[in-house]
Length: 417
Ligand code: UD1
Image (spheres, rainbow, N blue to C red):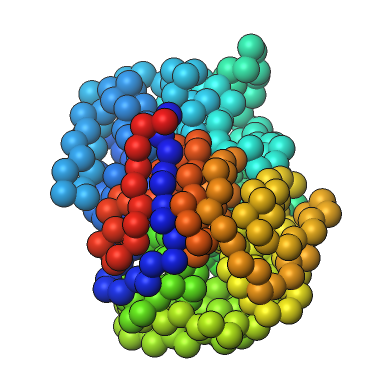
C-alpha cells in the first residue's frame, strides 16, 4: 500500500501534458482481440488498468509490447478464450472481453468485473443484448459462460445510455451476421474512439458518438491502428486544481470540445480561461462564486468530475448544489472534506456545499478513484500536510501524477505506507 503526502498552498506554474484516456484505452485493448492480425495503439497511458489488461491479453496468447506510449498487439497465436478470474475481478473494463471473445470465438468465460464501489454497477444491459444476439448466458460460481452458434445483428434500445454496454455491444456486433442498431446509445467521446479503431480493422460502423449507432457485421478484420484521445477527466482534474492554484498553468494536449460542461461551470464561477487550439492556460481566482453542478451523461457534466469539482465548490462564496445522477455512492468523500474544514451537508445523491471554507491538512482516505481526486484537490489547497491513504485507487486513473504536479511546483510525495 502507498500513501500520498502533500504540503498544500503551493502556486502552480508551467505545463501539464494530458495522457491518453483511461476509459478509451481499457476498451481498445480488449477490442484488439477481434482481429487475427496486429494492432498498434498510440498515446497509451502507463496506468495499472492498462498493465492488467495487457497481462490478460498475454494470457489469451497475444504477443504484446508497450514502449514509448505505444502498445503493439500481435494476435497470430491467440487460442484461449477463458480469462483468469483474478484478473477480471481487478478491473471494471474486463467486461469488454465478453463482447470481444464472443465476436471472435462465439464463446467467452469471464468472472464478474471489478472496479470502484460507487454503486451497484450491474451488467444486465450487456448480457440482455448478448442474449438477444443469440447468446446463451450462464453463470456458475461467479463465472459467466457465454456461448453462441451464430451471433446475429439486432435492434437494441438501452433504458439508460450506458458507456460500457454501448461499447461492448458495438465490439460484439462487428463480427455478427447482419445489421445491429444501438438506440439510446451513450455518446461519450471514448465510444467514437473505439469505433475509429474497429473501423481501421475493416469494421462497418456508422453514427458512433451519436445516440444511434449502426454496425454492419463483417467476416474478416485486418490489422488495426489508433491514437488514444486525451483523457478529459485527467484534464478536468488539473483544470480544477489550476482554477484554485494556477499562476499561468497550461494544460496541454486536450480536446476543448470534450470539456465544454466543465469549462462553462468554471467560467460561471468566475475562472478566467485562455483556450488555444489544444491547450488551456488557467489562473487562480480568489473570488469564486457558488455554482450548481448536476452530473449526467455526455455532453453533460461528467460523473467522474463531480467529486473533484465538489472540492472546488468549497472555495466558492455562497451555497452550491452538487447533484449526482448516475451512481448511488458518489458522496463517500464528503466526510473527509468536512474533516478538513468544509461545510457540506449530503443527503443520498445530493450535497449542499457552503463556501468559502478554509481547508486544513488531515489524514484522509481515497475511498475510490474519483474520491481520491477530490482528496488530491483538497490536499493541494489545504494549509499544512495532508496524507491520503489507499492511494492505489487514484493511481489507477492518473498517469505519473506525482511527477506532473511536482514539475509545476507542487509539494507531493508518494511513499510506502
Ligand atoms: C463508464 C466509465 C466510468 C464512468 C461511467 C459513466 C469505463 C471503464 N468507466 O463506466 O468511469 O463513470 O461510464 O460515465 O469506461 N447500468 C445498468 N446496467 C448495465 C450497465 C449500466 O443499470 O448493464 C447503469 C449503471 O449502474 C449506472 C449507469 O447505468 O447507473 C451508467 O453506467 P455505465 O455508463 O455503464 O458506466 P460504466 O460503463 O460502468
